Amino acid sequence: MLDAGPGTALELSRHLASDRLTAVFISHHHSDHILDLLAVGKTVLTDRLHRDAESGELMLDEDVPRVPLFVPEGSRPILRSLAALFPVTTHPLLDEAFELGFDVHEYEPGERVDLDGVSLRFELLQHVAANCGVRVEAEGTSLVYTGDTGLTDALPRLAEGAGTLLSESTLRETDTTGHGHLSSQDAGRIARDAGVGELVLTHFMTTAPEELEWHRDRAAAEFTGPISLAQPGVPIPVAPTRKVPA
Image (cartoon, rainbow, N blue to C red; front, side, top):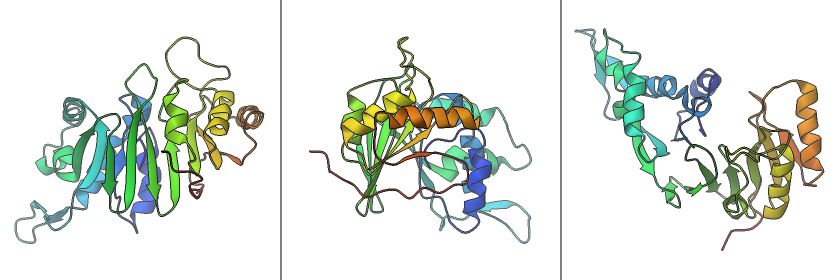
């Protein structure tokens, strides 16, 4: 799971009935990327709990592993504060999502992690809050996710030869404020320069159909490969890696 913005916990629940979440990555500490993380944490914690038949108390099942959670350096106090906002006084174990549900790992920019055959690489990009993009590679496929970023040479390097670039497309024009967001035209240029297989646009200011098509057209003016618009519930297969960066 890449980021946990509003509504993602509910959408994710449709898939967790038959599959267990294997890992969660958080790009940065802004509410539209982290707001549902506590709800997701309580869901994965519930997988590790059972009710004692005699006492009725909730008990921890140590045979069920915690779910790896990759968060930026310095995240632990933020996670504790988030959990403390909504205490569950009748079942204290349910307040331990970040201790018992997740296995928290504070990553550093440039770090690489291997996780059950999946390779993760974190790279610092350009945003008002420290934001890392991530490159996910497995079985000859690769996905690069931007989180939030403005223009930076680090992004095409991270995305070089990737199968799929999942890129934010927030603005109608290139950001000149230093806050750190991309336009669809920026995303198209990065996809072209990085030589990716396909571009998926996300993080829109509105989901109005005419606005989404406008963004697709702007990206297509720069990138001639396949372009998709991320939509809830619509699966997009990750494309094969085109080139492994040196």
